[in-house]
Image (tube, rainbow, N blue to C red; front, side, top):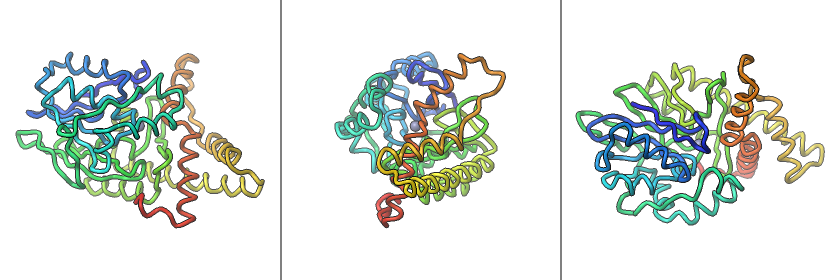
Length: 316
Ligand SMILES: [Zn+2]
């Protein structure tokens, strides 16, 4: 297994792709469309010819993971693009995905991500829970539906190396961070689904988790326990802050501001003291882009609202 830095936003250590070396090689995640050239160069530098890639596996169709899927499909004409059954149609016709992403990402849509490129429908394989991918020579990947971060999220289990490729379902931990941060963006974050997804990983007893943002973390059982604790704490703090906002008569963006500020204060990331100021500034920029506290707050508020109005069933 080889990590490939997608060089998202021209920065290192933002989003990783993982190439699984096997008779039928699989790339897990390709990153955004705008920087797909660096991924294609990386694959070529590893000696992968145009006919060599068998699969592109997407944990979910957010643009930081899947935006360049159409470009990878074009560069590797034998590759099948593997995605959850709930995400496939959006990759074949990404107009709705792009429109909603442009709203969510604001100016970053043009400067960091770029529009998702379509994948021809006949190149897509939509995955049901527990489907397997045959990589040849007895290597098999198991694909699990792991909603929570997004309704259509997949986790990828590689039993041969005892690994889970977790996309965003376990959280985000960039180099230099000592703890995971949950990724709870709107509109689909769902606490109970996210916790069940962690349990499904536990059942596989992996040794190591490969985060899309960024890199391997272990031992997996401790990582999964920390992910669960952090999810519960963020939801708890967001709920308290929301109730406080209501007591203060804050609504709309003022409510969101209050919840985001409370989360920021409570879960402020401290970078290593030895780090140079310029490095800290870049680390902060990376984290804001990927896992902005305000976006997490918006997702948590939406979740709490739907939970309290009994409107969560379709997300589970
Ligand atoms: Zn992501």
